[in-house]
Length: 275
Image (cartoon, rainbow, N blue to C red; front, side, top):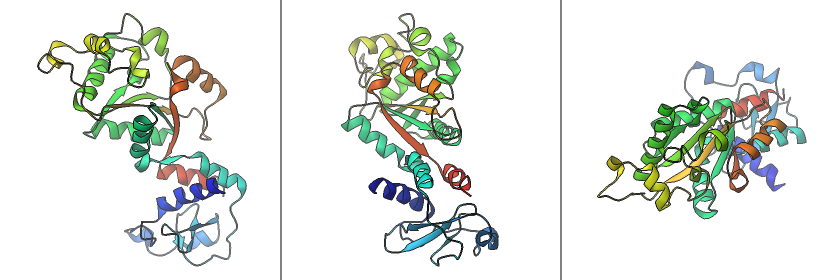
């Protein structure tokens, strides 16, 4: 099916370069195929990245060969389902999110494993076109964390950055305890609505005098908002309790575009679990 094809392409593109010759690997560990790959684990067949021939990839060692191993077996429907659940590869995520934000006029909310979400957080901390808003610091609401949040919001708006609202592994009482009328000059409810911050009354509340440019509340092109939330289980899914929390604790959740994201480590875990 088309969905199965996407799952296969996601995996093979992770392990092969664009020319279809395999990633360039260095060191003794990558010289030749590990002999143990022929004795334990499983081999999976995919089209290479160019789509012109089959390759076989081992689930434990991630060895790649164009020769069909004797121990090869077809991927089961269950294994295909596991791959389909992974979603968008982390390096491709910004482009996918930009389309959602710009064309669909929705805030993307990204789900991922602990490894994936922590990688996204680190990226947002250091990439010049990104700004991190770490909501985990607001598990106990305090003035410093609220002010840090305001600065992050304004900085992203002024300089046209992606604002990553990082929830981590917990959803606080956003509507009842954080985005309150009392805190609207630091953490406005408009954050959770597409375009909700680009409003004169909101900007007047959150911009301070030294944030203005020529007396204006400047918002540069490129400003966007996304939300990042970890799965609360080890099977790349949210529990029923978490799903309830998303509906009740995240303002305007129903208007957001839900996206899944994965890393190299997630692929290894998924296929290793199939061994």
